[in-house]
Image 1 (cartoon, rainbow, N blue to C red):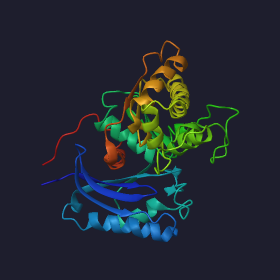
Image 2 (cartoon, one colour):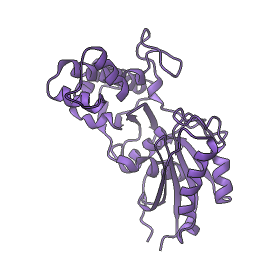
Image 3 (cartoon, rainbow, N blue to C red):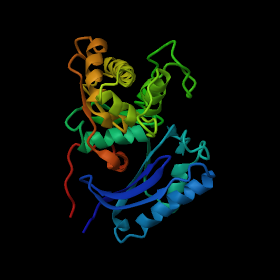
Image 4 (cartoon, rainbow, N blue to C red):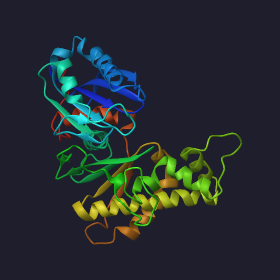
Length: 317
């Protein structure tokens, strides 16, 4: 019987997932609902309520000691509010208060989804054993989180490590965030595709123009597709090297849909890092693909509820 559990919520623009997680990071119960992202804030909260109802109705619920939430952002952990870019109905939405009303007096920890993924990768994944790490998601957007000195570093609002909005091209395209030349504006999946299309690439046959299609073309030797990935890799390398220089990380872990491109991305990324990470204390910086997959957000939210990425954990039977 489980005697010590945490509840985890992973909130994104596509799905709202929930789980009960034990102290070893093992998911013992899960629930999920689609995110009604284009509906009202109240409709989105009802989806959260439905997921929580699956968890709280379980016979395991009395063993839950805390709740962790990893949400698309920005988030404001100090206020307990979320304003996900891809959920327009939530602007300054009091998510933590709403969850508390449904679950009682349990402590609730809110972090950005990139921070949650960093916690998961440090606890169970590619950053395990590294005290100073940057963990990133490169997909529709580019986000990230930091582990510093062996502890999750979420910052005062829960957004620390948001590398996607570091500017790496001072004269670059305007970014929807309001800045210019951000990593996300160059290296996200839609922007890799946008660049390839602008340079004359077209998908084969009737295929949709996606980053995966660009990656397949690059792997097959298409020079325009390959150039779009090289450009994205250089933007990522510049952002990673800047982060490493600032806080002395020794590994960058990259997940998300674009990372599934494999060496089409990681090959030029490692090459570009040699150009950008040049100071003696960052030359040993390594890059690795993420290992946690689709459960990273849930496991990371659980880790946040446990106070970070636990160094050691025991299975509670």
